[in-house]
Image (cartoon, rainbow, N blue to C red; front, side):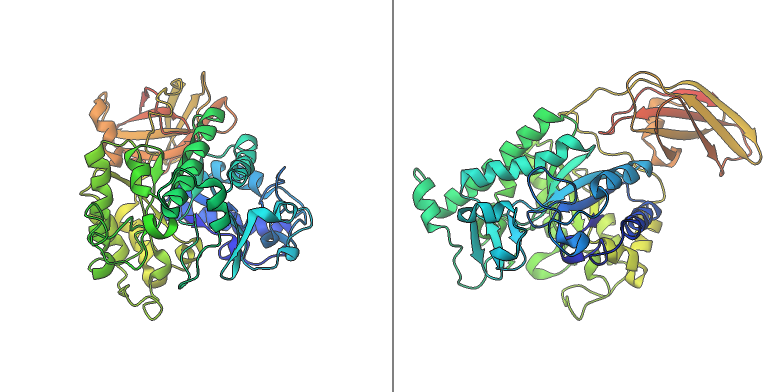
Length: 477
């Protein structure tokens, strides 16, 4: 699930809370994710050219203390990483590349803010301030600011949402004519130049991340409509009012087909049967982009949890508690769909109409390993050793010893009887009964409270950050 921090949407609930209060709130959100059966959280750590860690480039976010640049008294990102991994949650840092402020007063930013030191980088558009994507120094600075977090913290991924060039506001033109004159030579028009600016950000950031930490994933969650079919025969059979390619200058279809991303998570935030942008039509279109191109990019679907139960605000969304669960059922016919991300954490907690609970009941009754990304790393950890199983006190107690290259987690499987399981049986999710955090090495243990009375065979594998899984060790009881 996404955890949004801009204007305190999800966390912290308001600025100025004590470190202990902020930490308790984040832990509560994590625990909700675990209870819902999720295995990943996407935490917004750079909402407005600021930072949720002691950045070497940008000031502390005002959404922590109420004052931009004020130290919150602890390192929120270090805490977030530690607590996520302790719960077997993969943590992706969510960064907004160009948004500088939710207001228009440059002087309201912290005195040391890079935007005040480089006012020529900043443009006002509508009610907000943005870095100008067409300035090469802005692109280099944005990458450096993000890499500060990547290099210093054990993040599993870097995540962008749908904000590149801002969504159009009426007939107001984004004010970059002078920048286009300075840097746009060789492009047929400003639109092509703008798309090239965003393409460069995507490709350069991806390369920089993977050079520094090859296992760290890079993904984007764009507005789900690349182009409508009326605009481009390659587009989706939709009539949405915005198009990623033309309005945000994000050529998301190309990013997938040319494998510039490790994953894409289009925000398919509409209901099934909604004619302008039908959920089913868009999932099918995105799945075809991967299938036709053979792209390795993983496809996750962004789900609009925040629309459940508020049809008066989102009339295209039917107040049906089963709508979102139906989405996941529909996804099952597409092997290209590797998962879902739910926006946003507060609505997951609210569970209006019982919709998120229903998704858990109908789809998330078993643990799930992360989808592998063999183009980043295909080498599994070393298998565990000295696996032991003992039945006592109404449970089966397992223990084992870590060996070799450290694992991120351990996968525990249970099979009926005392026969050696075939390799294909490990694919059946019903046999995966637990994921155990690896911790600090040495001996690990886990107790199976639901162990059957009949003889059983247990298998334990070591799993790394990218879901690569070692050979298994077996024990019977």
